[in-house]
Amino acid sequence: MAIHAHKKGDESNDRLQQRFKKQVQKSGLLKMLRERNVYKHPLTRRLQRLRALKREGYRAANKKKQFYSNM
Image (cartoon, rainbow, N blue to C red; front, side):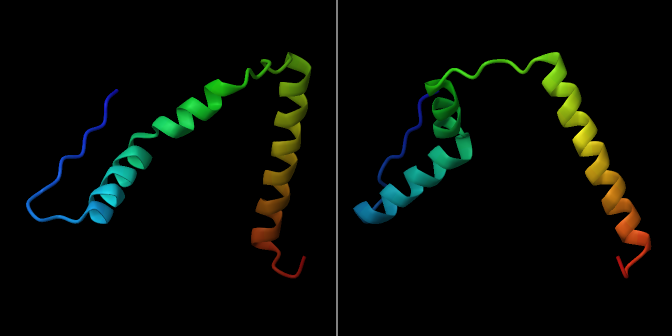
């Protein structure tokens, strides 16, 4: 995945650099490379289940809070 930015007319070097930086950010290339940099162990089934239960608890509390504003 190559990203190119060529100078347009009398465009300044700073502007060219900003345009290139924006292209890199939109592509998500740096994010992908940073994630690949360090190996992440896959979650165990037990940990997945615990996190899912915790999420459900948060969702239930938020839903309850939505209807009862004085909580």
